[in-house]
Length: 356
Image (cartoon, rainbow, N blue to C red; front, side):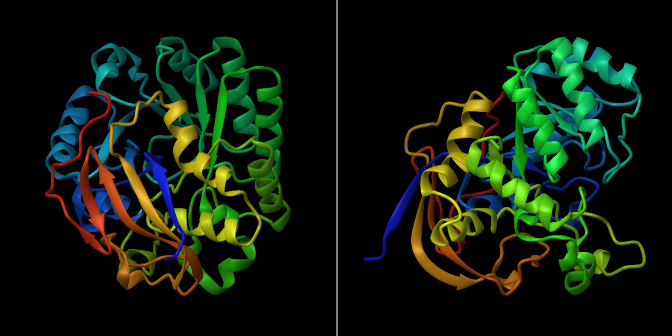
C-alpha cells in the first residue's frame, strides 16, 4: 500500500470565495468544495468581494450566504476602510476571524494609503484577533512600524519579495507580534513565466524575480514564513482573456500537492510542510481542532494538474499540466467524511463559522 499521510485540521486563512455580486466566478458552495478537495478543514474569506464587507449590514449579507452554502468550516474578515469605519468594530468583532487592510492596490476599491488612517484602525482594533495586511515592500515596513507602536498581532499576507522577507525577519527578531504567509504561485512561478502563461499569471502581488523567489524558499526553511496560503481568487477564463483581465488565480486544490512535491524533491521537510498548512495557521488564529477533523493523503501518488478535474467553478490553474505528488484521498470534518476521491459528500451548509 502506498504511504499515507494524515494531517490534522488544515486551514487556509487567505481565500476569496466569491459569491454574492460575483457569483458568476464561483460561490461559497463551489469554492468550499474546492477547499475540501484541497484537504482543508477551514478557510477564511477576504472582504473585497462586493458588496464589500465594510459595515455590519454587508457582513450580515455575507454571513447569511456562506452559512447556507459552505461545506467546510470558515471565518470571515472585516475590512478596514479608507472611509474610517472603525466605529463598526464593536458590532462586528464577535462574528469575524480578523481584520483586513489593503495598503496596496489590488482587486476592488478598498485601498488605504493614509498612514494616519492606518494607525487609527490599529488603535481601535482589539488585540484578541489578527490584523491582516496586504502590504508590499516599503508599505510592509510602514505597517511594521505601526505594529511597533501598537503591539497588536499582525499577519502580513502573500509576501513576495526579498525586501519583505528581510523586514519581517527583523521584526520577529525584535519580538514584534508579526507573522507572514507566502503563496504557491510566488514559490513556483517568477516574472519569466508571464510570457508563457500570459494573463493566467496575473495576480497581486505580481510575480517577482528569481532572487525574490529564492529568498522566499530560504524564509520557508528558516521559519520566517509561518503559513503557505493560497490567495485563492477565481475569475472565469472569459474574464481573464478579456480586454481588461482581472488579477487573481485559483489555488485551494493545488497548494498541498505543490508542497508535498517540494517534500518529495528534497526542498522542504515533511514536518515543515504540515506546519505551514496546519499547525501554524491553527496556532496563529487560536483554533482548536474538532475531533475527527483531518485529511488523508496518498503521499507518493503522482498526477498531472488538470483544470477540468478541479472543483473550483472556473476550472483552470496556472499550474496546468504540472506533475505533482500527494493526492488528497479523504477530508473529514467533525467526524464526517466530507470529501473522497473527487466527490464532495456533504450538503451545502454543513460548514460552521468558527468565530460565531
